[in-house]
Amino acid sequence: MKPKANGADYMIHILLMLMAVMTILPFYNVFITSFADPASVVKQQFYLIPTSFNLSSYRMLLDGSYVGKALLNSLIVTVFGTSVNMLVTTCGAYALSKKSMPGRSIMMAGIVFTMLFSGGLIPYYLTIKGLQLINHYGAMIFPVAVSTFFLIVMINHFRTIPPSLEESAKIDGANDLYILFRIVIPISKPTIAAITLFYAVARWNEWYNAMLFMTDTDKHPMQLFLRNMLADVTKMARDDMGAAMMSQLNQGYPDGIKMASVIITMVPIMLVYPYLQKHFSAGVTLGAIKE
Image (cartoon, rainbow, N blue to C red):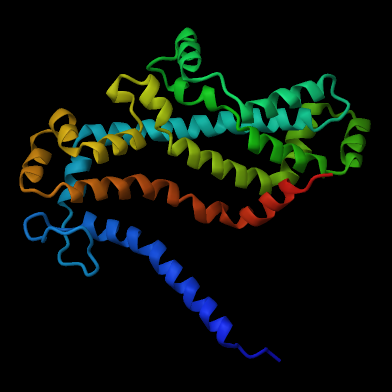
C-alpha cells in the first residue's frame, strides 16, 4: 500500500517543478528567438509565445563558409581529441592500477600534483610554441590529452576487476596488451562510455586553447566562433559573414543570429547523449569505488 502524500511532499514537488521551469525557460527562449522573423519581431529580451517562424538566421549562418569550417574543425578536434583522450587515459590507468608497477607512487604523486598547481600561462604558451603547435589542431588536442580526474576514476575502476581474470589469461599465454583490449576494456564498457562522453563534450566545447594558439580563423572551432559572435556579432559579420548578415544587422536584429548559432552549436553533441546516457549511473558508480 502506497503511503499518502502530505503537505511537505506537495511543496517539494512544486519546488522541483519551479526549478525545472526556471532551467528550461532560457533554452526555450533561445530556441524561439532563433526562429524569429527580423522584419516583424518586436524588440524585447524574452519571448514566451512565438510571434513568427523564420529560418533566415539559420540560412545566413549556414550559407557562409565560416560556420561550415568551424563545425568541421570542432568535429575534427572532437573525434581525434576524444580518441587520444581515451587511449592515453585507458592505457595509463591500467598501468597505474597495478600496485606492483615500479615507481607507481612517485608517478601518482606527480599526477595528483597537477590537480593543485600549474606552471602558468606564459610557460604553457612557450611550451606549445616550442613544440611548433601554433595554428595546428594538435594545440587543441595534445595539451589536454588526459584528465587527472578521469584517470583516477578509471584507475579505481580497474582495481575492482578480479585479479584472477588476468592471472588465468596470463596462464594461457596472454600479454598485458591482449588482456587490456580483449578482457579488461570489454567488461569496463559502462565506465569507458561515461568517460568517453565527458571527454567528447569537453573537446566539442574547446575554445580556450583555440583562442590562445589558433590565429588562423579558418581553424577556429565552433565554440570560439560562438564566443566571438556573442562578444561582437557586428564585427563578426563585417569580417567573416559578409553583406547578407550585415543587412539583417542593419535592421536591428542581431539576436536571431546569436541564438541560431547557439542552437547549431548545441545540437550535434546533444545527439550523442541518448546513446551513452544509460551508462552514466553504472559507469560513474563503478569508477568511484575504491579499495
